[in-house]
Length: 206
Length: 337
Ligand code: HEM
Image (tube, rainbow over all chains, first blue to last red):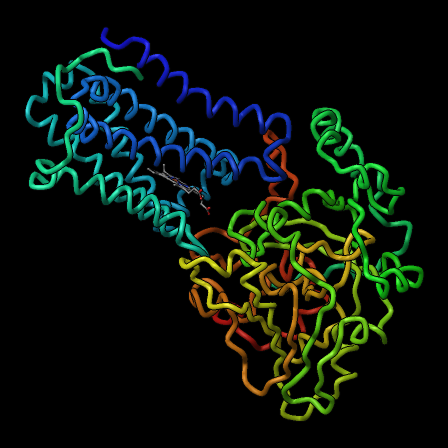
């Protein structure tokens, strides 16, 4: 395994947040409505991991360091994990495990439908993220994993429909998302500035 | 759907929520956070004299407020069998978009708002228009404590002891003309002290505007509040003067009021303007009419624990049907949400 330390630190950094939030909820430090706070933090965390994941390829192009690509899959799986927890928190805290109400929500609320589509997309990417699927799917695997950008669009739409009074926070994520999408346009990709493109896998410090 | 309740809001002293019920949760909370919380409190709060409610941060009340306190009619209206929300939760978890969109923003950012001196303008279709300094505006009124349920349109709820006086008393005093059909309220606009009003991305067209039909405003449950939990209103809860209409969703209870106008036409209110399909002029609490994005049939009564979500059925008119349902006979509440 290459870059074991880098991978491990990403793992620890990503795992620590949900545990910390759970602990905060446990000691009543999340205010009077801890369930809702957990839903929001996990949703936002998932979106942030998605953006970070999509940032790895352009970063690798710009720095020439292979480590970014090595952690890309792990970051994508963390995005999935956060959103899966986001869904669980929603089912438990907001719906109170009322399955009848869930079918109502799934029929009536566009933002929930869009969220679920996003989750199903992430699920598809997560189950095909292993080597075996990569080999089996071959060229189709690459196309399939372009789905990440569709999921980003769904996630941003889901988020937009939740905004009630101020678009500032949403705009920040949307701008970053659009910027990342633009880096995949070949003409722009070629013009990305290159730093330190010497030997790949050199002793870059993280 | 009209259910007959016993007159739920009149109550005698003996029916008041036992304080121990509500204290027990606080002590649980306290035990786990004691170190943190106490260390974080300023000295004056720790030294505060025992107040009517537990853990109430002492404020710095204006003189006119202190003078009215001895004459307060405590628990003039109460709720039965429902615990009062802890002061900390009612003051640190609320919406007041002038100070930011997070629930914690109002508590964080409202501290510097100057609430004294404060001027209230009365205008429109009234015999006695005028501009009043708040202490003069308040002079005629005796304060009453009204313990009301508060149901937010976002499907959470609390129980809060307000101090105020009936809005009807003000309306009688200002002598509405025969053209006065609605009452329109306006919140302060002060971008210097209200960071939410400085945001270039805000969807709200400031100042915040709310309104009531004249007969709604005359209903005895509608009050103008100047205090809560036995003290003056904290800034984040709408100091120094706010409306409280407990049978409507919380956003109708407009905060930090600077202008009250009597008008002939139904005023266009802030949320109605932003999203008319989501927020209507009436905004009566109604479990049978969903918000387009979530159900209104149930609510999370706060504080809710991590493993006891405290979800309960929402009541028609927030449990005040007996007092207010007659205002809406013949009105289709599905259309007039
Ligand atoms: C599995 C299906 C999903 C469900 C049922 C769901 C449900 C929810 C709910 C109920 C909220 C809170 C809404 C409110 O404030 O009123 C929320 C917020 C959010 N969700 Fe989801 N969601 C889902 C999938 C996703 C996905 C795929 C993403 C992103 C990739 C996402 C990102 C977010 C974000 C960013 C927020 C806003 C958090 C905030 O306000 O700070 N969600 N979601």
